[in-house]
Length: 273
Ligand code: CAO
Image 1: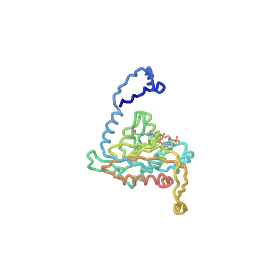
Image 2 (image 1 turned 45 degrees about the vertical axis):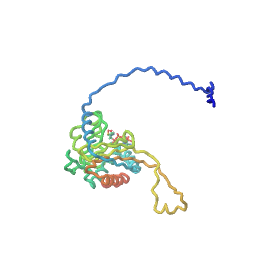
Image 3 (image 1 turned 120 degrees about the horizontal axis):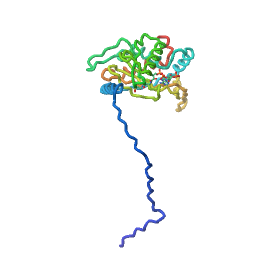
Image 4 (image 1 turned 135 degrees about the horizontal axis):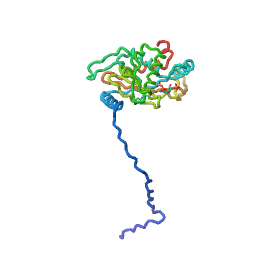
């Protein structure tokens, strides 16, 4: 049998390849080299050393609605002092550290000794004129929330002016990084050796959260459908990194639960400061 002849494509359905548009005229911008020195050079060393330590990160969300209201009231009543959220958080950390002293500790370079530090010298990561610096507030366990606020303002002003002292920058025992002051929800903080734990605070955001179920609510439902009420709450995520050679996840989680309780019930914090 003779092979069937393929009929030529109809001119109407032949697809024309699109003509590429010419590349826009651009001028190459020269690259720029900059030597890594000063605080950046120090950061290369400290961050590289810290990254060699096996660590884990644990995250949770705290409901700061009551703290947001309380701070608003205190700000109205006391205009002389800059009262951000950090002084409350720093004080609450100190309370929780009292029950978890292993988180307020140093570990030597060979990881042979844990030194439980007596003072709570809480470091605060600051975006300063010179770059990232972590001055610390000394003996937080002895300070009131307003004293912490004044000390934080002093360090922030010195940081802005590039005038933080060696004393301010050394001797920290536990650190916090309030990245939420700039924005963002989660961050994985890098340890500040020889400290064993650091927390990153996210931005406090208002969002819908299901209300706590009251006792008996679930059993009172006559159908399979679940009804739930919601409220707008001020939520903050917190991410903790800890040295996993000496700190286990359960310790970090229990510490975080205690801190969460204090920050969600800030009157307790005011009464017991
Ligand atoms: N969520 C929502 N609002 C926040 C907030 C948060 N997590 N943190 C701060 N705010 C609010 C403050 O309450 C304040 O509000 P008011 O003007 O109404 O009082 C405003 O934002 C500005 O706060 P602040 O930044 O001046 O003060 P602070 O005490 O909260 O923080 C400091 C001080 C120095 C920690 C902060 O300015 C800073 O430098 N943060 C960056 C830290 C950083 O770079 N971390 C990354 C390290 S790793 O590279």
